[in-house]
Length: 139
Image 1 (tube, rainbow, N blue to C red):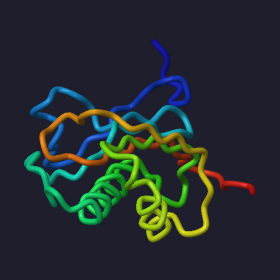
Image 2 (cartoon, rainbow, N blue to C red):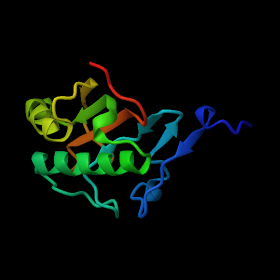
Image 3 (cartoon, rainbow, N blue to C red):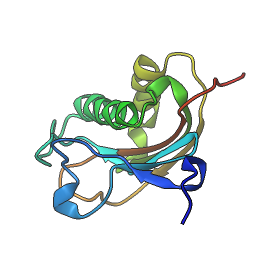
């Protein structure tokens, strides 16, 4: 066992934690990196927000992602990698527009995949991220 924080994975906790019901972590901080679980359009009680409204779901998803990153002493501005899952790839151009509202001109590495369904009925998008805690992103 090591006491060096750079060698440990520390679980990210939220209160309340909508993922507690599902038995999964919000994410982990490992040294200077934060790796999140996929965030979706759910409230703190794991209820779907914005069913049938893609824009509302993307906004809620980014707000959830922001909350998790901030709980790990990071931020949306520190994201270096996104994995995005959508139930209909026709929404991808709109997702790119909405993403700019949260990430500005940042250019994280990005993977986008169309899936047939997400964890809860009614979800249209899920986003997971890897972000820095300290330091800066050099373009």
